[in-house]
Image 1 (spheres, rainbow, N blue to C red):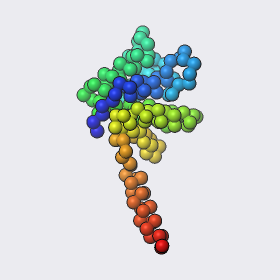
Image 2 (cartoon, rainbow, N blue to C red):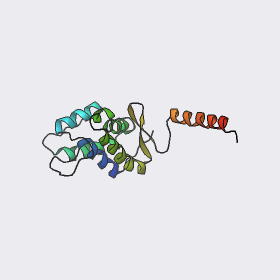
Image 3 (cartoon, rainbow, N blue to C red):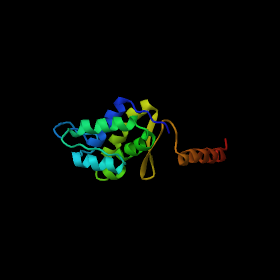
Image 4 (cartoon, one colour):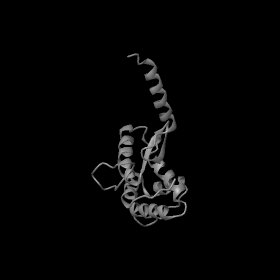
Length: 151
């Protein structure tokens, strides 16, 4: 799948992954992650991020921009985006998971993409496409509805 993320979507993704500023009084969209936690998160997505002495949010944003421009964007970006919305990270705050999904999907829609829950995992898909399971269920529901419609 060809992925082209807008600068706004990259910023939104960075906000979700980093959890925003530690000094920001407004509630964060994602989970607050320190510099070392951000490095571990990105390493789990096969991306080398080094925050070092720089600020964590700008370092993460620049890293995401480089990934988006790189030859492995088609492989790395879906993993990063899906990991940012991993439901396991929100087990104790399911309402926050819903907020993360809504927030990311608002931006991803402009790039022709969306995050969908498939079982217990999140998948990045082309916007407007349904998973095969849902498509099959719609067909079967239509068939059953036609069978029971005796008008």
